[in-house]
Image (cartoon, protein in one colour):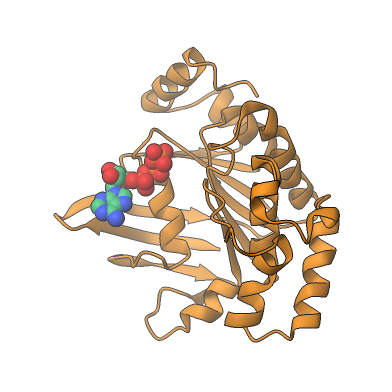
Length: 247
Ligand SMILES: Nc1ncnc2c1ncn2[C@@H]1O[C@H](COP(=O)(O)OP(=O)(O)OP(=O)(O)O)[C@@H](O)[C@H]1O
């Protein structure tokens, strides 16, 4: 997946993404870091076509998905998204939550959708929760269900937007270990995070966004260990001061 010269403005003409170039190689993990408001979520939303870009292009498997003639549903099937808030339907069981989009949006037969869902739930240690309702699950379990739901359409790319931010600290680990497992299985991921320790551990590439522009990009050892830009250094020292580099 790659972004070429992506520009996004909101209402009053404020530039939120300015000329962003970013390449996310297949089977690799890219972490977007940067201060609150630097444009991380907006970038993810532009990739998933939840936001329309003003200029530039986004490519997935060599196809320009930001071309207005492209079928948006087909694109979304190939891009899984997990947000900070799990957004599970409270009146549906775990299994129903996971199979809803494949069945209703993509027309997958019930038996096939359920078989795939159960396989994924099993893999994420949730098989025994399939018939439970979300309010019977911990936050960590709910977020893992949200990850299963994102995987249920067999995406080529997974976008993770601050997926541990709403969790109690003791529940963060179980969600991060799922991400590690997906990485080992070769899933291509683009994630936005404030957890620098996690970015450093799981990412193949770290991209520092500042005011909607990519200021610095490279392997985590380099960006965290020897940042070349003064602003990156300042951001990281603020993060260290707040204790979020470890973890
Ligand atoms: N729908 C919108 N309309 C207008 N402005 C928006 C909209 N969505 C985001 N913005 C603005 O765009 C800028 C970037 O926001 P974004 O949420 O992408 O940043 P972020 O880096 O993800 O922040 P955080 O780390 O707090 O999640 C912010 O100034 C935000 O207020």
